[in-house]
Length: 324
Length: 313
Image 1 (cartoon, chains in turn purple, brown):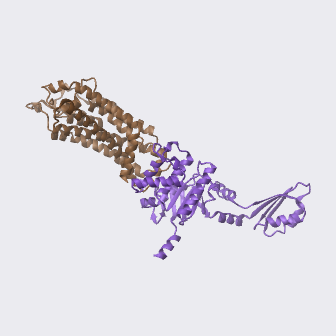
Image 2 (cartoon, chains in turn yellow, orange; image 1 turned 90 degrees about the vertical axis):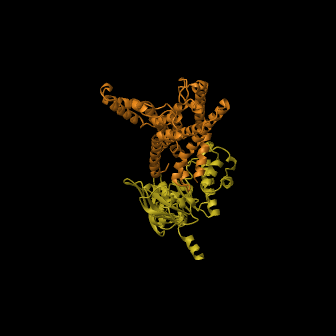
Image 3 (cartoon, chains in turn red, yellow; image 1 turned 60 degrees about the vertical axis):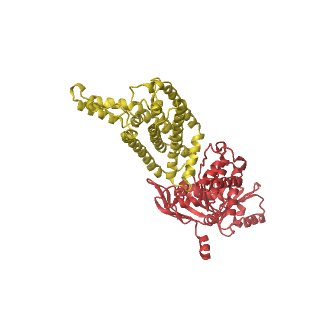
């Protein structure tokens, strides 16, 4: 039994294999393969209309796939959606609540639908409101709730069924930056505390990269690449090299005289000297070496900028190219 | 899970302004027609020519001075309104508010959701109707001191049941429209359109269509004349409101012995006496089946399209 259990921990908790959904001739999701492991926070990133929501709906058994399978918590989501929904909390992208019911009523209604008896549901709802910081708003009708408050209430609703997986569809949409930070921190903390697997979708790479263990970039129904942000950056670096831009003080002197020494840099791919600015592309990061060489040759450096292929680059490479 | 859903639906209906307005409307018409009938009650009960004169409580429901129609005729207009008002936004409002996705992401079957949308308003309406007629019976008992016949009670309860069934038909029709149309306004308008068609235009239409084919009554035998008459009546019975009128009239007026024309030969020797409850009930059984069938068809259809509907915002 013990061996079985440790094995289970390594098995993916969400496993999609060649999951496809077509509407007529267009493929909203095209042969998606994805494995998500227990306890990780996975970010499904892609522009609007990439098929993120459709994939999520198929994982919950709310939409039938055209082909392929989705196994969630060991259940086939298409054939046995109720078992899946019992273990998965889902926060839809434009979540709404019954406006004439209070936050507490909305929440305990959902708890009751998940099989909790009335008294227990109320207690648990109160507890969850405290977790997401809405305890003061418990008896307010949700009609008066702001977008950020609704998202928090939605998160409370996801958590109230003590799920194994939380699926959050565009959870940061329409919240102000401070709210986004708080919300993501909350998700991260809860995931660590309760060993919750989180799948969140977003078109906002910058916002979610801080909390995701792994991300998958999903464009036009296809998963282009997946891995941790560091890995993605590293891979791109391997492919494209590191680029460094060094700007010299405007001394009137020509920067051409640095060309020869710089050419000795290891792994240099391209070098362009353009008035006061020097642009280098190298296999490895050689910024420090380049600066040292320039200083030795009497250059007056005003700024050094190293492009480390962080988010913007990842974003541009995958999102922009896909539009071509 | 079902009862949680039904509880919530009932609670929302009862708390809504819409339902309060509807209750006021029903209670007002009920008390207006009751007031009129109770003021004419002495005369109606004393009318020896009327075979139904001994049924005080049925008289209370049906007597009228022709200024205000009796309650069951009122209901013929109001019940559709009640059904439509309680069902026209059942599914599309949830869809537009973003609550539907949340709801079906819970471990419940989609059927339960739809059934609760249907059962909950019927519970509310059923309670309302039963409360009203019980109030009427109680008031009658206090006011006149006349004992209620078991038969009368059965007839009145039968009337209530058929009224709930009639509301049920309109409710399932409007739920169907609320699934079919994304905008609550569209589904409400369509439902009201169908209601107007059946209550106002359908009889006119049947007359218009049939009249050109009717031979001059002077040149056909009585037999043929009767069969044409029967044909028109049967066509009219395609309308649910006609079925409701037939059923309620028969149940509330025990002396009604036929819903179609009766030949003189059949009338010869018949004593104008009230029918028993069983006989009246058997007579309206086709009407009850027809209403139930219409309701079921609408519900099955909405079930069909709702189960296959892609739910996403």
